[in-house]
Amino acid sequence: MVNTQSDLMTRAQTLMKQKDDIEADIKKAQDELQSQKVGMTERLIDNNGFPRSDIDLVVVTTARSNIIRLKNDHKEIMLQIEEALHAVHAEAIAEKEAEKNAHNQESSGTSAAGSFAAAQQEADKDLSPFARVNGVAPDSPAKDAGLLQGDMIVAFGTVNAKTPSVLPSLSEHVQSRENKPILVKVLRGESADLHSLILVPKQGWGGRGLLGCHIVPV
Image (cartoon, rainbow, N blue to C red; front, side, top):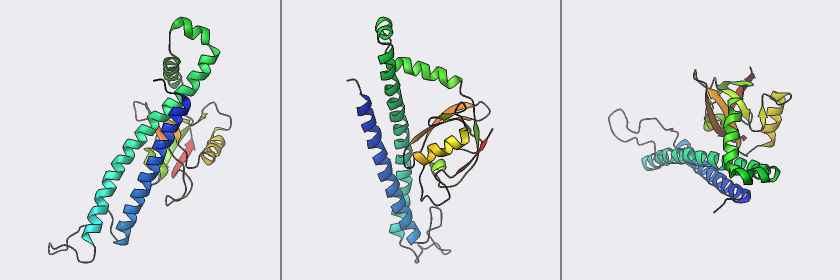
């Protein structure tokens, strides 16, 4: 069955709702730990080897177990969201290309989606970095997305090196996408491998700004 753009967008939105639910569950478990005044690493036995009497061990062990499980679920759902967003972008461009080049598509027998994939791979080769991640705050949206200090940003949603006033445009784009996923592409490491990440700008994560990272021009 052929997926339409609306079907793909519905799937992406469903995955985003699941992501939000997982994040809410993680926050609930973290609040339970905070109510016991412990985190993920403190010892649960006293110096004599007995269970600590100042905390509810059932609450703490259950919350820790839930956080570990939910964070693994979060990583998996973010991968699925990335795939879904790629599919949405591919379908949107494929439909546009199909309208413009219906005759060429018919004669060549090449699917629009296949043409987009090849074109996207070729376009990625020409991407050049316009900014560098100079720092990432713990527990921030940038950290959750997988951004690392030293990453070279080549695409931030619709913003790239060819965008006029690139850093102000990036800031405007982030503001317009609060609580919505942004596809970010970065070059990483000495080999400059291209990585695609999904970043969701949001407030209330415990620090300043919507991203929790420091970005500088290159």
